[in-house]
Length: 156
Image 1 (cartoon, rainbow, N blue to C red):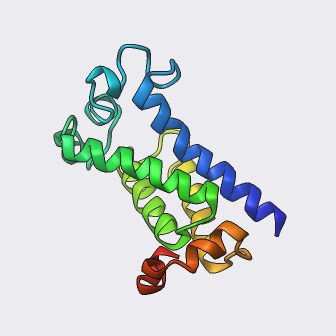
Image 2 (image 1 turned 45 degrees about the vertical axis):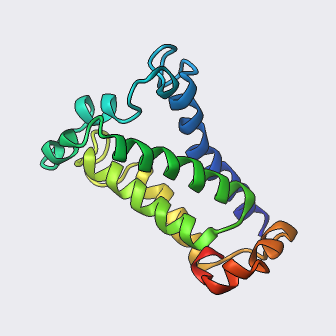
């Protein structure tokens, strides 16, 4: 369905944008001079200051960890690219739900609604891609024909 492709690309851009903003400090969520390229941890500001709720001490203890920084940034980049290109959808959707779930838990309960926020909505959309996969594009078909993808179907 055409709307599914549009949702997939838009959601991919939703993951990819913060990656570029946090790497280069484009002046939106990350101001110039405070980017990863400037040596500033992409997770420290959020994890140290924006988390709240019962799990906040756990998430605050992870602030500034190089391992957490790399996992977070690679997650944003790879999930975003996979969604935009329509390849590796299984693993991208599962990883996206996991990443969004962790962000949701770091801010639980949400401030605007007692249960639902954009992280839940985006997760449901990702799960719908798994439940109702779209017809593969030419690029996705080529991806699926690669030997390592055939060997590891989770990469489809």
